[in-house]
Length: 234
Image 1 (cartoon, one colour):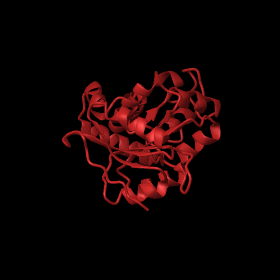
Image 2 (cartoon, rainbow, N blue to C red; image 1 turned 45 degrees about the vertical axis):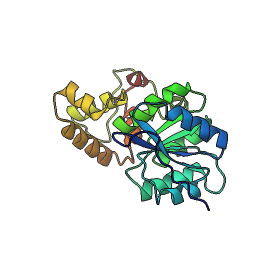
Image 3 (cartoon, one colour; image 1 turned 180 degrees about the horizontal axis):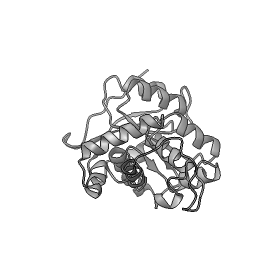
Image 4 (cartoon, helix red, strand yellow; image 1 turned 135 degrees about the vertical axis):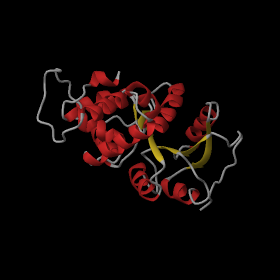
C-alpha cells in the first residue's frame, strides 16, 4: 500500500494541518485546492480509504481530519473510531451527503467532532474547520434539522424545566450556551470575565459529568434535558 506523505506549499508556522479522506479522487483534489486557499490551513495528507489513512498517519501529523463516510476497505464510521482511539488529539469533521437520522446517530456515537454536508456552500467549510479547531464541534444547519427530526433536539418552551440528570452550576450552563453558539474558549472567557484555562476546565468537567466523547455529546445532552433550545444554535 502506497503511503502518501505530502509536503506543505505554505509556511509551517501557525498552520492547521488537515487530513483528507475520500475514495473519489476528484473530490479529494477539489477539496485540497479549496482548503489550500483558506488562511491558516494546509493539507498535510490525502487518503482514499481508512486503511491508507492509518498508514499515512505514521509519517504525518494532522490537527483535523475531514472524513467521508462511504468508502471501500474501511468505511468512515470504523475509521473515525480507530482515529479517535489511536490519535485522541485529532479532531474529526465528517463530510458527507448522507442525510438520514440513522447516519446522524452513528456520527454522534463514534465521537466525531462535527458534520459538514456536501450540499453546503464550499466556502463555509473554512468556518467549519476553524470552528472545530476553536470550539471542538461544528453543527451544520442540516445536522440541526436532522437532529430535531430524530427526536434528539426538541423545541421546548423556556418554562419547561425537567428534572436534570446532572445538576450543572450556573457557570457551567453559561459555558454550554455560549459553546452552542460556537464561541471559542477565549471568546467565552472574555464574555464571562474568566480565563481561557478556567473555561477549558469547565468544558472537561462538563464532558466528564455527561459521559460525552466530545462537545457535540454535551450539546445533545443539554437539548434532551431542556437546558437549551434549537434557537440557541443561531
